[in-house]
Image 1 (cartoon, chains in turn brown, green):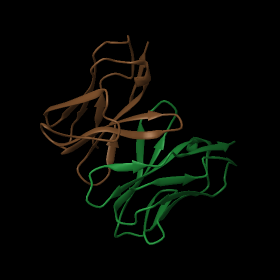
Image 2 (cartoon, rainbow over the protein chains, first blue to last red):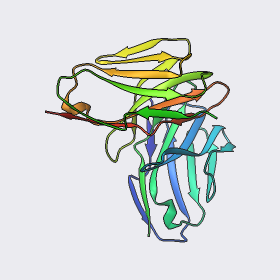
Image 3 (tube, each protein chain N blue to C red):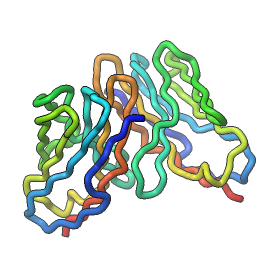
Image 4 (cartoon, rainbow over the protein chains, first blue to last red):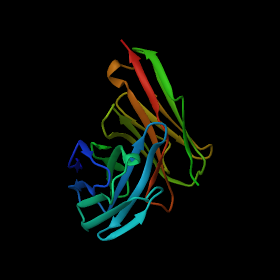
Length: 110
Length: 112
């Protein structure tokens, strides 16, 4: 089975900090995605990557950036964390037939 | 722009009932459709994936159907159990895109 691992289940960060969320998949998938999930808003796509060093903006990229230096790792970066970025962050990978998700990172910005 | 709607938003049923969850989408040019389960505070677990050329997929007590022409998919859960309590999400990948668009989910509670 494909495994998608997110490095932290829970994170608490201060306003203005630079935050790194890491995601690693072990099945050589081309495509990787970062979503955030908020009550009443569902899952919203932040960024995705379809190859190493390739990235595309999703629906809500403002305040975020990403890095994909190796195929198995896709990092989400909050350049200067703000309280409105408190959310559940979900990483997924895909080889074209469906997503496999990680277990999520609950980020709280105080 | 693809939009995905799930009805009902919440459902509470006694154990043993057969139930149907609905998902509708606005653009019928889909590549595939995926149903997920999410437990509180957790990530999403894939349940079933239906390719655009398929009409249905089955896994154990779960059956998902797809009708592209009417823009609908249903997830049928047979003989529901308390362990089925979770939020069920439908996601649609439109042809020519990499990403999935998600519905807001149906929160299911199965009472013992």
